[in-house]
Length: 325
Ligand code: ATP
Ligand code: MG
Image 1 (tube, rainbow, N blue to C red):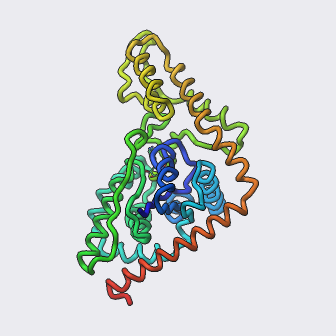
Image 2: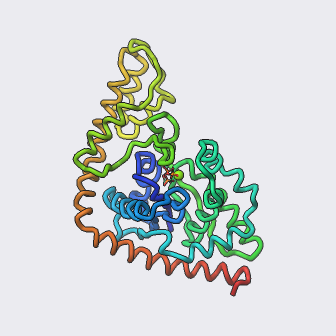
Image 3: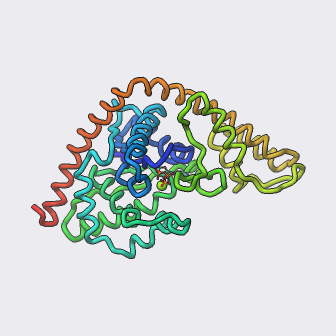
């Protein structure tokens, strides 16, 4: 199966990115043809500083490799290194109903939060569709927030196929039960744009554990008294703990919630310890990779070359179908 997904270089990747998406990339690379890209064109709507954007792109590649993405098994590349996608974007923009895009909640939410919306953000689901369709992708592993965009992609692909004959493969979203919507430090969806993230890596490796524990301690909680029992369902600390713990540990935590007589500080400490044990090895690996940037650049170059071969074929198919050739 052709599997495709992307991550935006808009800041350091966080627990939501890992448990919602990146963890799936790593699993799916084993038995599938995985295409994973760093969405720098998408990031342009947020990051308006060239040095920072370049830095985030390399950081994202380092992060993916450190977490277990293997360029020998999967194709890792940078979105803008495949210009065919931008051409396909135009083809799909023409014929994309305004109403369809107006209904997209990622745009609506960002706008509601007061983030400046530009035309790039508004048409983001179309570029995302071009990303998916350019590689004949069948499966798109994502967090829950992207499911609607994949429906948009199916809609646009279906419309095109209907007008011009079978051209595009219709993809399916793949989400996980646990981790599809990881809460941030404020209990809302964790997101780089909402400044509520728990990062996987920090700039200074020595500081990472300390910094992340501090952020964990700052996670908002309700004002429940220590002796009171509490329903674990829907509690974001409990949800965060569940990401790391075994079934037995989760059961024990749920029982503690229902019994009461505990403080949220204990749960936070358990999260800090579990996350440190979980991500520790990837942090070590990242430090090694940072000393070998040539390897990273070469992986991205080879990945783009492979990706372009596929995208050129699909673009040409689409151009012929709609009369551009
Ligand atoms: P931005 O705020 O810039 O959109 P983001 O934090 O939403 O950044 P993206 O790069 O847009 O991260 O998303 C990369 C992948 O991570 C997507 O598949 C997305 O669905 C997934 N993802 C993002 N946030 C979460 C979350 N809180 N829980 C689960 N999955 C998530
Ligand atoms: Mg996002």
